[in-house]
Image (cartoon, rainbow, N blue to C red; front, side):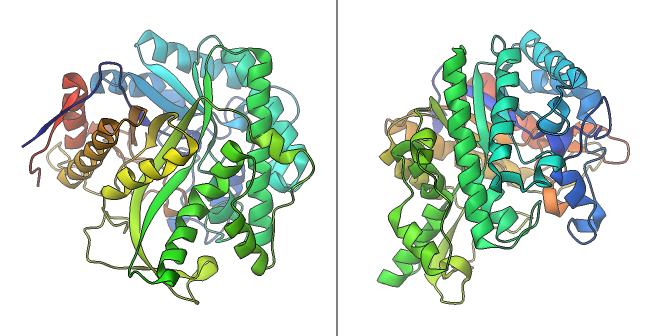
Length: 450
């Protein structure tokens, strides 16, 4: 057994997203989002599930904050539903939506929990998708308007901001692979969408600076690590493409003001390139204050000309997998954190990390020991990276509670708290109490938990 101590000012937290937990999709003037539309399109979401009720956190937020308080977290990452603030994305402001988030943020602060706000976690107002979504620069301008409303309203309360959650998912998972809303399957569309959100990010950071907001702002990509199966040039190149697809494609523009050339060349060979207009890259390349990192898994990759857009296949190396099928290999988090040092030793938060473990309630308990094992392994890698001098400021487990897991519906559970979707009863899991102990002590001890 080894004990790993964390700095006194290290932020421990959890994370959620608005569409996944709030429910109340037709309450208090909220508009329709692309996920409302997508989830109700037959065949798009497992079992036809949708977020109409979800965890009903819109009505139960005080109960959920009480759980956070019991857990002992000192920061909570949540996202705001754009359609609650501006129902059609670019028109009248909905005061009831603002009032809800004021009540919510005030309650967090009252409980000594630092609000960590994500402006966009995928629930684009449907009215904007109807005019082309992120491919249309009117949507970019609408996002800046929405951001300004949030900055002005909450600038005195919220000190930590993220513009976008997981650009790769917004661009490629949703518009090339078609697995998420709006469900396109077109590389050119995906590149256009990716460029649109980067432009919206840059413009919103500029607006944040212009308004003189007292706080810090950044972006939260999802990243994966990829290890080549062999020492062949082809395998290495395939893995480089895989890493860059998630990280470099979105972070090079933010930090360097350009797309990675080898990926531009790769996509152009496939017949597509981002629609970059004069001045775009300068706008995107704004200094940010912190970086959020969402990490779940890594893979061993091998070149395969039939392996999708990247010509890579992921191999089954016999690793333990979570119930959603993702291999558990915490070393990837350590490696990717070092990889990102090429952008500078910026303040970094692990804004999502967790495991899908579908254990249920038995005699009033959820003994999700596999989740504890996963969290323990990854927290050790965070400590290891900090020991190397990396500027890691906090860790946020995904997720506070089981919730609507996008295209997987309600069958995949990532929560520290079990949610019965019929009764909406919350039951803290064994992992909840384990994490509570880590936070209380501010140190982690490694031991066999299975």
